[in-house]
Structures are given as structure tokens and as C-alpha cells.
Length: 539
Image: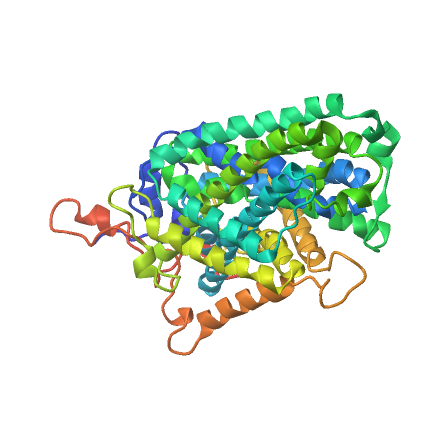
């Protein structure tokens, strides 16, 4: 009789350097994508997903009113250490089981039999909404940056409307859907351009901005490194904690390389190192950018926040470089933001594809399709784009509603990060790490990572200002809570709910045929009713 395996036991593989396709087969999946991404390009996906300078520009409004220069400089440094702990814990899991399903696959594999289906379901849905809101938040920020460029060009005389912003946003989303529908090799090579542009932009701000800034906008070291200012009414300590939203949003989405596992060569080593190196480079370059901005932003923080340009960093560049210089540099920031949006949709489409492959999404039979010409999941690309367009409609409900998309991108990702990292230690299992191994540091690093994420999720549900009203409310808990409630209802829905049919990751190998390979094919199939054979037992 053929030996049957489970997803739980499949996580306990010890992959070699050059056997990515074989590892994927042992995890239960056949190779469907071209493995066109080199380790450098996998790093490029994670680094461009972070999109360092445009991301800092997008969320500078969190740090400036909640601590000013001190929060920008030292808040970034503090948050980077905790972010690295999360990345290290995730990298160890990614090395053990490099698959596009990533987070929910690990959760299922390491949880107890009674709880694994539900936990995998929750992680899969939170990771899916995180991927889609990442597209929405990045492209909405890009639309704002485009209107800021128009504001600079018109000497701050141009004011945009929500209708115009949404029109620009829709054009960005649709253009990204077209781009990401192209072939894997083309998308892989683009990452090299993305790396180059992002690194160059950071060095321009770090080196050129201090040289070009007029004396009236140059700040002393005591101001740039030690001035603390609160403009939103919160107590100092809490305001500083709120300012951490800026680095946490910027250096986020490092699971992006995980979702490219099935298109990467040497995935068991390339994926964990892409996670770690993208965080490390972003932390170092981002700190340099924030220090440069703190020295060159002037002392009137309120003027930066309320500028007619509508974008704090754009105003700083305008003050330092003048109209022509600021406009030229800002155009490259917009380009980097656009590239970031394409990476977000690329990664999100792979997460959606993996979740549909396991039958967890509505219309999974239509979403789990590979285009015969491009060899990419075109259906999931356009599905994610359509949902991003729908999320963008929140702009018409008010500024706070669309701003909630930014915090949802962090909080939803943290829900999906916490669960597999914690599950590894909460439940009894036979986890065996891959080539990347933290050894005895695994548990303390995971403890720090999970504790930090739980704490910050609570913080991100607070409104940005102490003067609370319907317009100033933080709607993150409403939007995210509503979405997660729907996913739970969908799981427990009588007769039709996932509890009746969702059994976690399932093999996509074709049914066995007569011949010598029958046993090897059968060995890859899932058998959800068998014991976990000591790999993950109910605790």
C-alpha cells in the first residue's frame, strides 16, 4: 500500500540547496510556475514591496505630529529591532517549507488536529485581505503623490477632489493588473530595476538633501535628534508609540518573498535571506533618510502637515530643492511608488492563487487557473485588482475611512504573522528547521516578535488624535473586524460553511495512473483522517 503523508509532516523536511521543485512536491504541490526569480530578484520583490522612500513619504504624517524629529529618528531605530525579530522568526519557517501558501500552510502543519483547519482558515483570510489592502494603500498613496506633483508644478495652487483622486487611483490599479499579468521572467528581471531605483533615491535624500537645503530650513543636531513635539493632543509616551506606525508600515510585507517561493530558485535559502536582508537594508537606509529629513525639515512642523501640496515629504523637498528640483525628485518617488504597487499586486495574486488552490475562497475553481500563455495566475491578478478598486471607494466615506486601509495593512498582516509563529511553540509538533536555523534563539526571538505584534495591534486601533468625533475616529477595527467576522461566519455557516469541507492545504497532483509511478503519486496525496504520527498532536 502506498504511504500517505500529511501537510503537518511535510513541514518537517530538511531541504538541500538546489532541490526546490522536489521540496515543493514533498509539500504536496506540483510545480506550476516557472522558477525564474534568482535570489537577488527574490530580495528585489521584498525590497520593492517595502518601497522605502515612497513608503516613508506615504506615512510621514504619523511620525511628524506624534513626536516630530525624535520620533522619526529614534522611533525608527527602536521599531527596526522588533521588526527584525519578526523577520527572523518568519524566515526560519519559510526555510522549512517554502510554498506560496506560506503562513496558513505553516499554521495548519504545526497546529493540533482539532484546531488546524480553523486557524489555517483565519490566517489565510487575514493574509489575503492584508495583500489586497497593501495594493489599495500603496496605490492610494501614489495617487496622492501624483496630485502633490501637480501641486508643486502649479506653485501649490492646485487642490484635488476625492473624485479625481479615485480616478487616478483606478488608473493605477488597472495598469498594475496589466503589468502583473505578464510573464514570470519579465516580472523577475524588473526587480533589478526596482532595487536600483529605490537605493539611488535613498542616497539622493541622504546625501544631496542636506547639501541643497537653505540655511533657514536646516536644523541643529539638538533639534533633529532630540526635539519632541506633539500636535494631536496625545500624552507624549502614547504619541511616541503611535508614531511607530510609520516604520511598521514602511518595513512591512516582508512575507512577500514567501509568496514567491514557487517561482524562486533555491527557495529554501533564497526566501529566508530575502526576508532578513530586505529588513536590514530598509532599516539602515530608512534611518539615514529619516535623519536627513529631520535635519532639513525646518522647525515649523504644522506648516509641513497643513501645506497646500498635501504631502509632508513633498513640502520638505519643495522647501529644500525649490520647485524644479523637488518636482524632478518627486517624479522618481512616484515611479518608485508605482513599482511598489506592482510588487504588491504580484505578491497578493500569488497568495490568492495559493488559497484558491486549496479551495478556501469563493469561486476557487475560477481563481485557481494558470494562464497558458504567460504561465501566471491572471485570474487572481484581476480578482485582487477588482477588490482593491472596491476598497478605494472608502475614500468617499471620509479621510479617516481610507486612512484605515493603511493600518489594516499592518494589523491584518500581524494577525497572519502571529499565528504560525506562536503555533510552532504552543502546540506539540515535530518541527525540523530548514537550512536557515536560529537554534536556541528560536523561542526567545519568537516570544519577542509575538509580544510586540500583539501590543501594536491594540495600539493601532486607537484614533490618530485625542479630539475624537465621528470624522476623527479610527475605523480600522470596524473594517478589519467586519471582514474577519464575515470570514468566521463563512467558516461556520450551516451546511455551506468551510467547517463542512475545508481540510487545509490539499495536494494538487493528478490522480494516480496505472504504471510504476502510482505509489509515488499517491504518497503525495493528503489524508486528513490519519494521525499526525507524532508531528503535531492535540495539546
